[in-house]
Length: 629
Ligand code: DMJ
Image (tube, rainbow, N blue to C red; front, side, top):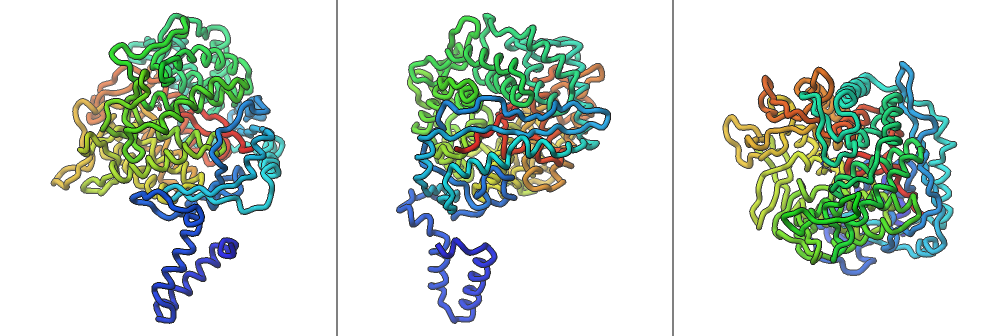
């Protein structure tokens, strides 16, 4: 106890003295070791035996600046209460009311304030549970009981005080800088193409000046709503809002993909509701949320991939009764938030059940999951193949993000996340030649492949977010290494744009770079993952190199993917600067994610979507973090 009361400096001095005395022979190595053990393992010993875990590291303190206000003890380790899912209904279901005023700017473009506030009175039952404090340790993430004698309820009040709208609303908006202006310009250019040639349709085809439909629901428009809000584009936002009010109809005989429509449409509508406070968006979110619910009517409760939102029927893809693991485990943030807002727990129940079930499943490899799950049996299928790329990626992302969304109380999510990252370290990490870049490969039936999807570049950002929330400093070090790798996936390529997939060289060969690209993989779809991670890395470290890397990427998007008549296009060949072979398609996530993360990356205003108040869904739509009761 006394040891814990000492400051870090005092602890360091004592340890230094012991080391000094040991070297001088005054104290034996053994007693030095004992002291060290008793200091570092105290929490572990208190809980009794820990499952034996290869690669287990002792807890490290959070590596990053302590989160702003949300948690008082995060500078040490996050507090975890006994395993309890957040209870519904929550008291306040209003939007976060993030904007004191709308973000519209004059010539001197200014950032809007995002004075977020999710005030939820703790329900009585929760208060009682909170008094039973616990110690949780998981592979280097040691979460100690709250040291303060303050009752949980007074803590809530404290956090209410510090995040109050009144308090923050007074702060001067921060003017946007030149790089952000360049993003606004890029967005306007992209939007012009969409508005002129694809208005109300899913995706712009900028070369043929037409559009493509996927679900026929104005996907790009909905995905881009909160980006317009954040960038301060008033006219564009108002016009798009009118379309949502008058033309967005979900009562259509159309099959939509559950995951894609959840992350883009439901997520986009919910975040726009929070940012704008406009109930139109909540009404639309409820409508689509309800229409997606039939997907969960399966023998196993693992949802089908496709839903007919007009007929209320759901089914798996034609060729299989499997769903994709990432898809069924990356819809939770959105449905849980829908429950919180509506007070109807059915949405949260459905998605929580999926997570609980997946938590118990066999077929994982040190926390790594296969890519498919059967909707009848509820079991993983196609066992033995592990990737952090397509079909599994956002499973890992949402473990951490749900834990954060729920106020860091759902221990199973944290356990699964920590175990999975250990699995990544054990099975998937390798170093390339000649630059010794750390990368995440794939494992197929025991065989390692040095293949990495660009999609995996979400991982540095997610690891950094975990470290910011009190997880081991080790994760931050890995995030830094992987961030460098993802940047090199751009920098080592002729156009300065990453291909969809790279293969890393494991052996040095004269004239070969780290990154090799196969002809089938050399396209670029304007994907966001690298700039997304750059945003997190800059937010948490303040290291300007991350902004500079993002700036290079923006320049290269402008150079090779910008279509003069409006819009940006995916390209087929990142290795041919003289003809990158435009594909004639602008994906909705370019506006929903890529440009939004660029704008946030170039900002120095940590309150422009404060990461202690919001958690981004996997389509870059910010949703409020529920204030812990
Ligand atoms: C987006 O729809 C989401 O980011 C998803 O998680 C992965 N694929 C695209 C972007 O690359």
